[in-house]
Amino acid sequence: MIPAPLNAESLNYGKLLAVLFALFLLLPSGLEAALVPPERTNPPSKLGVRSSSFAQEQDDDVVRVNTELVVLNATVLDKDGKFVSKLRSTDFQVFEDGREQKVSSFSDEETPFAAAILLDTSGSMETRLTLGRSAAIRFLEGLRDEDVAAVYSFDSKVEQWQDFSPGRDLPAKVFGLRTKLMTALNDAVLRAADDLAKRSEKRRAIVVLSDGGENYSRASSDKALDHALQAGVTVYAVNMSEEGPTRDIAGTSILKNFAAKSGGRYISTPGGQALRDALAEIVEELGHQYTLGYRPINRARDGRWRTIDVKLSRPNTTVRTRKGYRSPKS
Image (cartoon, rainbow, N blue to C red):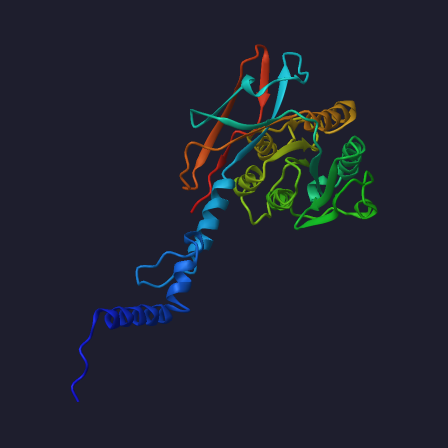
């Protein structure tokens, strides 16, 4: 049989059927993909397969940018050593490795702070342990209602006797502690810094009550200091050993280094009214600091030390803050 000749109408009908069949083949994959908004699709990898980790990589990038904010807690004093209040962000200039940075956040509010008390219970503190406990009690009594504190002891190991709380009494177990031979000061600072890093308070401090001896830590003093700086912790070191020629020079150096590089204070007086006044000043200082934040111009994640310098436009004033930090390493 000879097929009937195709006319224009039958040709158009055939084309329509072909288009409908092609659309049917697109479902559910092709058409579904075409209907998905561009922001919900993952770009193909080099092999033409969707990259399941792409969205996570984008999230990681966002996290990395957010965590690059460097926060500084700064204490400003006048020529008489009194706190200077009512400064503005424009009164501060922040430099990192000599390059001026843009201050992106600023606060002068009397916000709550979190503090960790580290009581040395090593053998060299045998005759000074009672004095150390008294200093811890004095510091706790001076805290405001909204502040929190934790209590640790350290000898050959680090132990926490009170978690961060508004309690103002030294835990009863601390009064029963006896001195042991070795001293893990660096490990204690590192442990407290890591615990403080988890706190929501932006103002964080470690108060070290020790003669500064170090002979048992796994961590170096540099590593402990790095952890403190990364957590934005200010270290206040009280040298509990007797003043004079018998004082441990190496131990004193360790305590001074922690305090100086973190923007804290080294207190050389182990007892008496001078120590009580110093502890009261620490509490007052923590409640009256300025908090500044900036995002570094140098975004390299090279693990190198970055030096920080803060300058003030006000005459006859000095500012104390941490001396720098170690950048994260990719």
